[in-house]
Structure formats: C-alpha cells, structure tokens
Length: 375
Image (tube, rainbow, N blue to C red; front, side, top):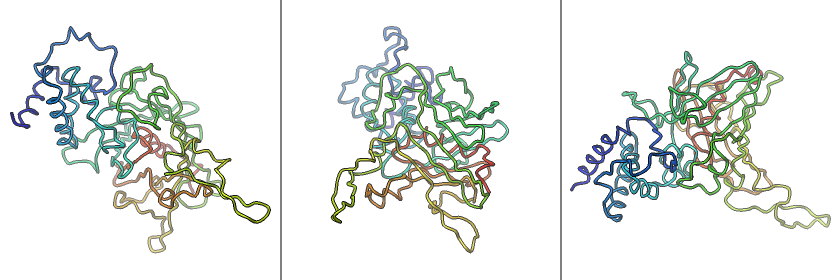
C-alpha cells in the first residue's frame, strides 16, 4: 500500500468518525487525555486499531514529517483521532514546538516556541466587532483559508478593559471549552495582566511536556505588561516592560554567570551572584530604535516583516542585568516582534521562551487606547 493511499484511508476514517478535522481545534483534537470521553466499549473500533505497533509508529512518523504545514498538517490531528492506540503513539511522535518549530495541537499554543527560528504569524483586526484573530503563517493567503490559532474580543467595562482569548472566533464564553485566558487592562490603559485559564503546573515552561493530564480549569497570573507614562509628551515610540511570572530568567541565559565585585584592597574576586536570582521572573523590554535622519522617524530592523510605520510596532528583548555577564547575543536576541503590514493587518513573530498565547496577549495590549503614553 502506498503512502498516499494510507493518507487517503486516514481521511476516510476521519470522516467516518464524524468529520473531526472539520471542527477547527476541536475538543477531540487535544493532545491531553480527556477523562470525560465516552467509554471505549461504546466507540466503534476502526480496522486500523489492530495494526502492529512498529508499523503504526512508522506510519505516524511519516505523516508527521511529510505534512509540515497547514492545512495538510490536519492529517496529524486525524491520526490522534482514529482510536486510543493511534492517539497514544501520536502523542509520543509529535514533538513540542520548542523542538520541531511546528504548531499541531491546541496545547502547542501554551508551550514555548522554538529556540533557533521564530514562529511567524499574523493578526487581523476587525474594528466593527472589536475582535483580533491570530493566524498561522507569513501573511494572509489569497484563498483566505489561513489556520486560525487564537481569537480575542475586547470588552470595555466601567473601570477596565478585558480582552477575552479563545480558540474560536465565534465563541468567547468563559464557560466554553474554547476559552483559554484573558488580558485585563487598568483604567488608564497602561498596565495589563495576563490570566491563563489553566493551573500553573500544567503549563510549566522550565520542563515542557508533550502532554499533561487534564486538570481543573482555573486562572492564574501568567504575566504583566506596563507602558511607561509620557508625562512630558515627548515624541518617540512607546516604552514597555513585560514581567513573565511563569518564565524564569534562567530560560534566556546559557550558563550561570559570575558577578565581579571590588574588595577594599583593590583586588577583584569572582563570586556567585547573590542579589540576582536566575529563578526570578523574566522581564522583557523594548529594543531601542534608532533615529533615521532622512526618514525623520524611529527605525528598527524587522527583516522585512514590518512595512508600515506605526506607534504599535515593537521588538522585545530580555532585560538582563549587566552584572550577569550574559553573552552579547542574549542581550540582543529578539524574543517577540510585532508590526503593521497593512490596514488592520499585523505580523507577530515569537520564539522561546514565550508561547503563542503569551505573545498574542502582549501584542493585543498595544491595541488598547493609551493617551498617557504617546506624545
């Protein structure tokens, strides 16, 4: 049997189970085990369930390697939807985004991105509905069949503004299984808090796992964003700091550094850092732009990913204390960049240690009105 015929049969199995892949990020597509599924004796068994484990491993491995991008990568989700044995082997085969640089299952959106190259996405803003949709890819395609990753809707309240984040652009209910978290701003729109709708242990980023047991849903603070007040109304880009409570500083430093301190005798001694802990939360800051005399504007090198000047454009790097003697590239490495490429269209590129959810929350904070931060 050829590999193409295997894929064709997989699609038939998928359709026979109710068109699972037709529901974007459906509940049955989650890599995490769901303890509320129907007992196995009530599920019709597919003839594919009796395949030898060695052959099954090879089939799923080839599917995972060949279908690298969406929509073709839906075949990998179909493999996890065939039956319990296929689901288990798919969990073992599909690597986390940090290792493979791909987004496959919904849980991938809460896991850190790759270390080497960023994952490239784009955001579409709909002013009429106050929604913001995150898509997977370089830019919008002509067919408009781009892979939806996350959606956010702005909800203004008396003393704050909430951006409710969901896996679906049609359902923003907090009681829905598609609800993943929210971003809340203060009254002035200068301080934001990221709330993750999972327990902290299930999204621990120091040792990411491919799958974790389904735990009771609860919100915890994943990070906070602060825009500096522009009291003097001076011209220039916005300045922001992001404190990522769930990510340690050690995630962006290759080796523990030594702090040099001067002793009274004038000799220099090297001691382990005492006042700076690598376990403290990672802080991100704006990469400083340069003033372009000919264009008369502030500029950053977005490597072609941003084409329209905007006060919302930014690049974030780690805020590392100089005493840690981190490598120069660790100070300059862009962890998240966001910028405008057209009317209501923006690019979002992120990498380790941020997840897609965290990066998206930081980016949509720039859409809230900030009269106190701009000149």
